[in-house]
Each structure stands twice: as structure tokens, then as C-alpha cells.
Amino acid sequence: MGKLMSAYLMPHPPIIVHEVGKGEEHKIQKTIDSFGIAARNIKNQKPDTIIIISPHAYVFSDAVSIDLRETVEGDLGQFGAYSVKMEFKTDLSLANDIVKNTEIEKIPIAKIDDKMISRFRLSKKLDHGCIVPLYFVKKHFETFELIRMSYGFLSFEDLYNFGVQIGKSIRESDRNVVFIASGDLSHKLTPNSPNGYTPNGKVFDETLLNLLRDMNVKEIINMDKTLIEDAAECGFRSVCVMLGVLDGYKIKANILSHEGPFGVGYGVAEFIPESYTGIGLLDELYRLKRERIDNIRKSEDVYVKLARESLEYYLKNNSIMDVPDNLPDEMTKNKAGVFVSLHKDGELRGCIGTVYPLKNNIAEEIIRNAVSAGTEDPRFYPVEIDELDDIVYSVDVLTKPEPVKSKDDLDAKKYGVIVKSGYKSGLLLPDLDGVDTVDQQISIALKKAGIAPDEKYTIERFEVVRHK
Image 1 (spheres, rainbow, N blue to C red):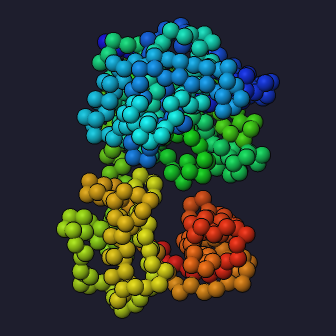
Image 2 (image 1 turned 135 degrees about the vertical axis):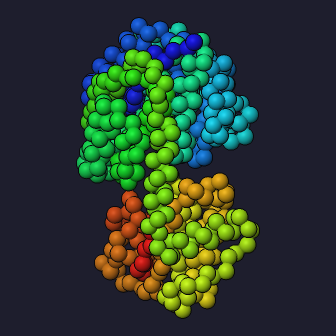
Image 3 (image 1 turned 120 degrees about the vertical axis):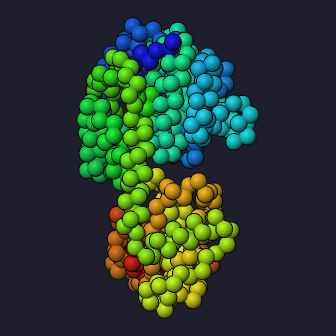
């Protein structure tokens, strides 16, 4: 029977490697010291295999991934340190068992081999999210096989379930295993951060590390997605998978260090399984998710309910539904442009709308645009029937756009914008998460339109009534 020896949260700043930092690495000495503690503990545990999940490996929007090549290798050449080279043999037996258990759970998993790398023109090299933590491990211990994987933009519950299947595969194997969740915390931690600054960066880092210290798994999986997104992190999903790997164990958690002198949060933490109880949280996490969505359904207003019913009807019947009876007069007698947005697991799943009305009334506009948002948004694959239970809808009803003379007439929270240059135009709705200024709003709208910032363009504004 295999054994999970330990799990670690480790950041991956290339500057921490001496050959890259050339002395600058001492500005994050706490992290270096914590890496040393972790590496020495791993040496004492003598694992047969290290599994590492990296946000810079093969990340897909709709699947987790696992590297199934016999050997993996890479270097830090992109950071000027070609001499930092690594090559590992892959533990294919355990990797294939993880694939099997993951597929049984119907979690989409991308199996990375030479054919897939060629088909999608992927890099063959190990990424720095793997190399940086392993650089320190290899200083103390080298005789291990590796399994390299990455998360996908699935629900946090599904990522946790992926971790559960990894843990199950470990126990069913004959391997002693260490799991490393590679990931940095907030990239907006201080005013000198190159990624911008938000006070929520510190809030996110402190909240997550405190919850990890207490192993408060339910609170972590149900963390505020707006806070997570605002922090601009890259390690949270790695943590979700790691927590799944630890599911069913009594854990001794130790936060080894946290610092952020470059504006990025670097947290190092160690998790030691003391015993396996078999009492896991997976069913409870899925139950809580279902409860959240059911509560959203109960609070839908008539606009949102119509959008949801429209897409559900279309996918089940392959036809557009008729306008239902007993809708308010404001929906059947008025015309307006309408945008319908779909979100799944906190991520945009589709958004289509009309600036000016094209149908006989608002109700028809919602019905048609809901179907378009689910099936015709070119950024996404069409929504499938088995996704419907997880889709959350919003409907924006637009006022008639009006021209503005300057940016002083705009407000990113109150007004949406339309930019136009010749035949090119781009629209952005108001009050969007992460869009806090007029300059951000216009910049995004220009990019959507394909208009260069130095081109001559006009601006229109509009208001919306948002239904959630």
C-alpha cells in the first residue's frame, strides 16, 4: 500500500534561484530558508515519487492535465540561467492510475504525450513553476521519479475531487509520495508591484494562509471568488488540488513563511498526514455548491428566469421557445437592447447581446440572446445539457446609447461604453469585476474593437438595468 508522506505549498519566483537572482535572491531569504526546511524534510522522508502541480505547465480551460512522457526535462534559460538543468523519469505506473481514477469520476483530463505536444505546439520543457521548487529539493534529495501536472479552470470542487483521486491512486500504489502545490499568492501585494496594487492582495494572502493553518477546507473551497480574482494569484487552484490529495487525513499544518518584497506573495507551508481516517469532505463540498446554486435559482427575477428557461428549452428541444404568458407589460410592450451573460463556477461561460433592439419586445430579445450566449459566443464551446445545472445567468437591459464629448462624462460603475472607428466598434458593460476606472474600461473596449489607442475614435455611453 502506498503512502502520502507530506504535501507542500511552494512558490516559484525564478529570482530565488541564485543563478538567476545573482544576489538579489537574498531579498526573499525567509522563503529560501523555508525551502531548505522543506527540502531536508523531504530528504528524510525519501519518497519514491514527487507529484508537482504547476500553474505554468499545460493549463486548459476545460481540463486538468498530466504529463505522460517517459522523461521530462527543462532549464531556466528563459531567465538567463541555462546551467540550471533538470531531467526526471516519470512515474508512469502511478500517473496512469491517476488518469484512470480521474476518468472514472468524469473529470476531464488532458493526457500530455509527444503527439499532443506536436498537435497543439506546446513546449516540451519543464516550466519554472516546477523547476524552482525542485531546484531546492534536489540540493538535498535526487533519487525520485516525477509526475508533472496542472490544474484546469474547472470548479474548485472538481479540482478538489481531482486531488481526491490522486490521493486514492497513491494509497492503491506501492509508492511513497510527496505532493507539491506550486503557486504564488497575490501578485498585487504592495504599491510597488509591477502588476498593480489592491488592498485585497494582503487580505487574500492572510485569509488563505490562516485557513490553511487551521485546515479549514470548506472555507477555502468556498472563498469569495471576487477576492481571489482581485488578488491576481496563481496558486489557489493548486491549493484546491492539494487539499483534495489530503482529503480523509488528519493533518498537521505548518506555515513556514510568507513575504512579498517584490509585490508578489510567497507562501511556504508544510502538511504532514498523521493518520488516514477515510472521512472526507468531497460529498459535503458538492452539496454546498448545489445549495448555493439552488438559492440563486430561488432568487431569480422574471428577466433572469426567462433567460435560463430559454437556453434550457433550446438545448432540450433544439428550437426557440415562445414568449410565455403572464410576463410583465414592461417585458412584452417595450423594446431595448439586451445582454445575457452566463457564468459557470465563477468564470464567464458566454455573453451575447444587442445594443439596439432587434426583436418585437424585451422578452423576445432575452429569449434569443440567451440562446446566442450559450451557443454562439465564439470565445467558448457551446454549452451542453449536462452543464445547465451549474450555469448562473444575468440580464442587462440597455438604455439608448448617447455620444459623449470627453472621458469626464463617463463613470466605469454607472455607464457602459461603446467605442467606434469607421466600421470597427467595441462595447463594454458597466460595473464589471476588475474594471475600476474609465481608462481601463476604454482600453478593454478598444482592444475588443481592434482599435489602436492612437486612432481617432468616438465614444458613446449607456446605462443598464442589471438583473441577477
